[in-house]
Image 1: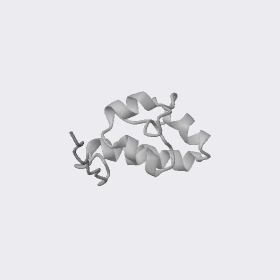
Image 2: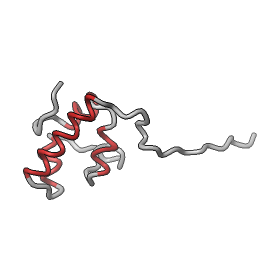
Image 3: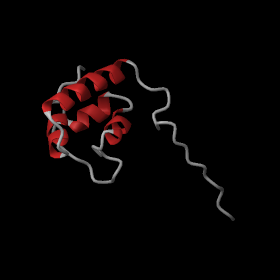
Length: 86
């Protein structure tokens, strides 16, 4: 599936590994904030003030990410869990 500006956020998250991290890094919080956004990539980007040129870059970057998914989907962030006391 090719990423376009008209892809829904739901499809983007389902189809492109690492897309949530990428979008968060751009200032567009998809689902990690606990308040999912619906609509298209273009709508989400415009809502955050991005212009058409920035949206074209997002599309290109996300297509590259789709072709070459990151090995570490967490973006290098790891959480250390401590065992619960019994």
